[in-house]
Image (cartoon, rainbow, N blue to C red; front, top):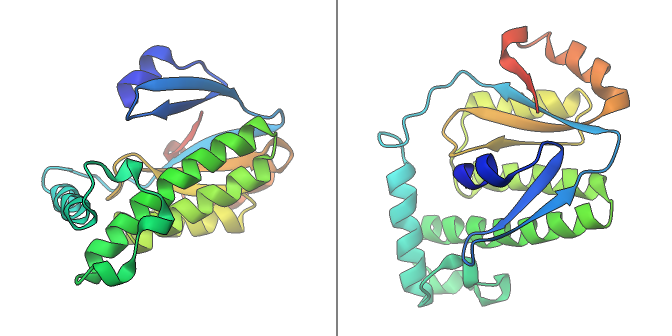
Length: 193
């Protein structure tokens, strides 16, 4: 995904990628909104982290569901009672609901409903933290501070287990958000997208 957006993406546009079909679309971001990254400074080494564990858990969930790829599964097909291990169910629940959130996010951008887009960012982070368990205390704290400071949406970005958060902020609220966030984090942690 990173390589695709780096080579095809356009600054100021959202990049929608269907990973199964390798088809993409560039979507307009409504005027008056910005994205800001905050570096948690939590270094992640995906090889040594739980990344491989999550991969294996998702493979188990695909086997239980009898599918080749969780990206093809809709929520109504996911039955909690089919899973003996609640942790494997939670991993599948995250991926299936995250895929739907991405489709909904595309729809909200097309309809110029950025606030609903922000709500999806928040739901995404909550699921990443609680169901996929790929966030950290530091990252969760940045998300909480960002939302308390006026961001419309905030979530971790990238592979998880540390790294960056991305916040959606209305331009008119940016100064207030930034000044509040500087109470918690030094300036070198902030990156405008």
